[in-house]
Structure formats: C-alpha cells, structure tokens
Image 1 (cartoon, rainbow, N blue to C red):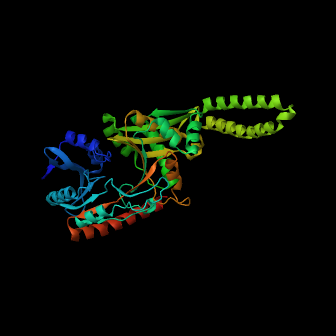
Image 2: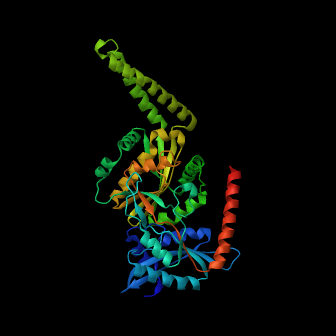
Image 3: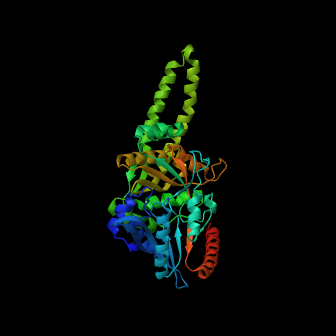
Length: 425
C-alpha cells in the first residue's frame, strides 16, 4: 500500500465519520490557515479503494533555511490499535516528507493517554504507554506531559472537557448536571437574556468580548481578522456558529420592579399578623437584595442603554463533535449567568442535529481548588463533562542537525516575543 494524495470530497466523507475527528482535520482548516502562509495537502493510504488512514498536512517555509515545517493538526486519522497500519503509514510519510524538503513533522493526535473520572482523578491501569512507545520507536520525539496552561507548549490543548451526548435525551443530560448548574440555567432564563446568532458584522462585538476576557484571564487574544477568516471559510458550509447573548436592561428592570412591588404588598398584608412574623422577617430581608438589583439595573440602563451584549461563544461543527472553541463574557455581568444559557442552548442544538459529543475543549490538568484555572474546569464539569487527557505532541525529525539549530533559534524567538508581550502589559 502506497501513500496517495486524496481528493477533497473523499477525505471529507472519511474524516467526518472518523470517531474523534475535529475540524482541524478538514480541507476547510487548510483554507483558513492560508492566511498565515501555510500550504496544505491531504494524503492517505487506501485498501480495496477505501481510505484506511489519512491526514491533513500543513506546510510552511522556515525563514532563513531552505526547509519546511509540517504539521498534522489533531492527526493522524487511523486505527491506532493497528500498529502495523500505523508503521506503514509513518514509513510512507517519511519518504514523502523528504521529497517535500521537510525539517520535521509535528502531530498531536486525538488519542487518550489515560482515563479520568469527572473530577479528574486517574483511573488506574488505563495509561496508553504502548502507543507512545511505538511512536518513539518510529522516530517520534514526545514533547512531554504538560499539566497547566502556563506551562503549555503544545499547539492545541492536551487536557479537554468533553460531554458525551450519545444515547441520552436532553432531559437525561439536564438531570445529570450538578444541581448548581441546573439552577444557573434556570436563573439565566429569568434574566431577560436573548441568544443571537452573529453575522460577520457582529464579529466586532465578539472580538471586544474576547479582548476583555483575554485581559481578565491573562492570555493573548487573536486579531479580529482571525475570527473573520474562520467565519468566512466555515459559514459557507454551515460549520461554524458565533453566538452572542444580549441582556435587556429595560425589560429586566420592569420585571424586577414588579416583583419588588409584589413583595412589598405581601409584606404589608402580613405585618399585623402575629402568626407570620418569622416569615415576615425573611421577606423583609429580601427587600435589600431587590433594592440592590434595581439600582444596578438603573445604572446599567443609564450607562449602556436598553440592551447590551454581555457574552459570546464560537462553536465549530464537524463530524461527530460540536466544539466550544472560544468563549467570552464581561465580568461585570457574570451574575446573570449568560454563559450557562449559552452552553445549554448549544447542547440542545447538538442533540437536535445528532452530534455525539459536545466538546468544551481546553482545561488544565491541575484539578485542585487552588489552581489558577480551577473555575474554568469546574464550570465545564458542572454540565457533566468528563476529563479527557490526550497523549500529547510529537515531532518526527527528518533532518536532526538542522532541527537542533531550528529549536535553538525558535526558543530565542519565543523568549523575545514573551518579553515584548510582558512589556506591552
């Protein structure tokens, strides 16, 4: 069996039906990456005219040397338990990559390393060291097991939060959620929030949300053109959704004032009833909360007008998985639980459109309450999402002497870039 170039349509059919295929392994991702000077191709192996192994390959010229870096994002797509097939595929790739003048190939397969329970605890006896050892035997260098985002070197997250939707109704999914998550969803539905599907012109709103969230959580955001490029390529195929959550301050203020008046009327009716003094005290305590909410809403309405976008999310739709790739919200309005409404909205969408997995995507592998990103993990865990630990990133070096020089130069470049970003802050 020889490596062959695959046509777009035959690969789409294969990749969409591969169990853990993501949008990275699609011709559309090649189109998106062209903006950053990547070129792409799709190669595979066939048996009886049927694809049995394949991958997207992204290639970019390395400045200063006559070599290319090659990346198979979330690749390869094949049966990793079939070590004979894996060996044949890699050996064929080595020949192909030498012809392409490649310096190295980077992969980060969507393959589990170890099973975990919903709280992140390791399940003994589930480590996938056999595959890691096989990849090393084939010439790959493992880039290590990072735990937190701060030490992350991989191009994509190694730790994921994934909600299995298969053979479950939305009622089942809702019942399996943590009680506080169910409460937050119900509460969000009372807060005069509206989920809006964004068009291209609305991406500026999404970018503003992402900038605020990046500053708050200390990560570097992408430029507006990045989100526009994703939207331009994928919206034509209905493979992306950008959703915004709008709050109606005017409507919520009127609603809250009406509820406050009903509370005052109730207090007035029972204030002279000696049998209801304990209940009266509880109701009187509620007035302080109502007054604060009303004052906040009046201030928001004066400052922002009747409505405001307060949260958003970008979702990738491909194959069997719906991926929550980016999410953002204004800290000031998090009390209205807009992100809970957003995720519940898209979980329902995923069920209606027969997706088997709702992938909340990246988390840290440190699950202690003291960890920097515990809140993000805990938010996703509340929906019933499980921890998925992947095997990590590997480099297959084609030219070892040149690779050492490249690695040293790249580390210097990264250090200078980090210093520049630090001083920008």
